[in-house]
Image (cartoon, rainbow, N blue to C red; front, side, top):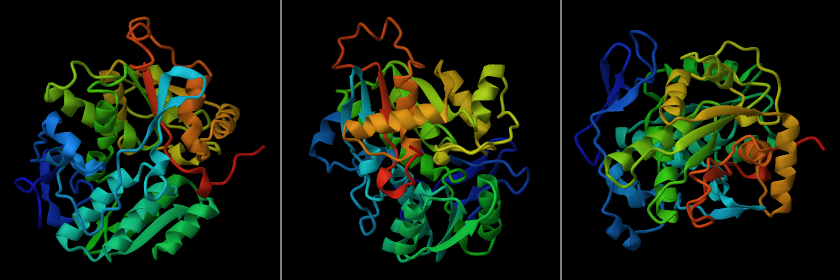
Length: 386
């Protein structure tokens, strides 16, 4: 196995049990809780050395728990940062220009690299589409068999992409949670790595590079506010982790505020946040055009709520009408995203996220008050209703 430091373990924070990586544990056998990465100490590279490195997420090698998988990397990372249409105080990070068309490549390459290092022959993933396609692509490059479980209503473009990569696609009727349950059952088979973007913490060590890149692209600083979509929370948790690591390295002097955005028809985290609850609210999810964040029972919901509160942030919701309007506006500005990818811009353009006075006087537009991601390409999604 190739690890840059002493081999880490997976740790259950609820009952303090540790699992060696070769055990392929994906949740705690004692309490069924989520596992975090233990035994890995990141060291952010000397900023003066970054200019000579390749423009990929692997430029932050010292801060990553795996060495660069040179045989499977697709050059993922360092996506463009552009000015939002009509908003010089906001930047949009174009993560849909990743190799498979979504930000999920950041975490997927980590999971497949882990599987390759452990000698795993089969991977299982569940997804609303983007995480599955990302894992399937990198699994194909690593010659690892891959089963992907998706909701039956997943867009045909994403299903076609999965099959093109050679993945075995299982379309599950019912809710997104039904899909996760089916994948979890398959993941318990011996010798199978559950490449879950929710349960496996290596995924967050990939998505944290989103914040590292922002720090570089903004000249050694982060914006006042990170506006992020939230369903399962893979980008929120990764961004929070990355910002904490930059703070610990002395490269920023405070954590940016995280404002997360949920779709109003499926907003268990927003409801819990408003009520001051520590865990997601029980809800009955309704259909939404923002299918990628329609998660009624996020497994790491307590961690997401704690992370957002730690930054002094908030969780807001957007309607399908607002998402459709934002989707159309982005397209007219040359940015064609899937509907879920328009959720953050919907919140910003609807005036749901205001710049504090302290942020609006910091030399804009060089220092935008907010940055939001454009997470997934519109080329592989169902268009919103006109």
